Amino acid sequence: PVIVPPGVAFLNGHFTAENIITKTTRSGDLVGVFQDDAAWRALPADTPIYQVEMLQSPQGEGELFVGTTHLNPGRVGDEFYMTRGHFHQRREQGEVYFGLRGSGLLLLQSEQGEARLEQVSPGSVHIIPGNTAHRLINTGSEVLSALAVWPTIAGHDYASLAQGFKQRVFLREGKIQAKEVQNG
Ligand code: 6PG
Ligand code: NI
Image 1 (cartoon, helix red, strand yellow):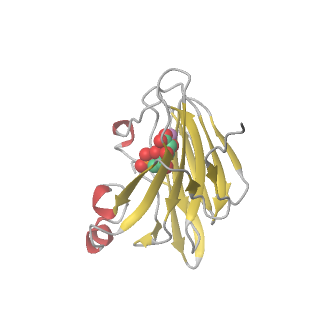
Image 2 (cartoon, helix red, strand yellow):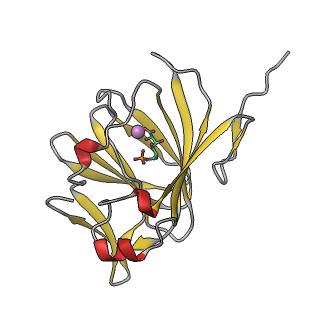
């Protein structure tokens, strides 16, 4: 007998499987994430910003989660919608992202605060080493979907980035512009 495994539709990142877990992050959940606080307040708190769709997996040492992040297009003020971003709680644990649809950036930052941006597009492969914080930014006009694979033991540490990442990405004068910032 041949088992039909869960699948992912590469055109939209949705899984074909029975047991999918989804979590939506809304504007109101992203306190202090965007630079323009007034613009953030002006946005209804229930505005969906991104959704994570995950396969149910066994958890423990050696096990992997597989999930897709669907990040809506939009801006808070002139700053593009983005995920909260995190280090893994188990700092040394890496992750791989695969661009599926839309266009955007993956912001990576070391513990020393060195930030770099990778272009995310359909088919792009992103190796996130251990000890590296990561955030997706949607710089396009359609949903940005990226498939991710990461160890179930990795966990999330959001607190270490409460000061923000060292780069922010804006639409200014009709152009996508990355700016270095001191503290978020
Ligand atoms: C993870 C993945 C990924 C991520 C989502 C949402 O480690 O779980 O990097 O699934 O969690 O893209 O991003 P935030 O967790 O930063 O909100
Ligand atoms: Ni992660």
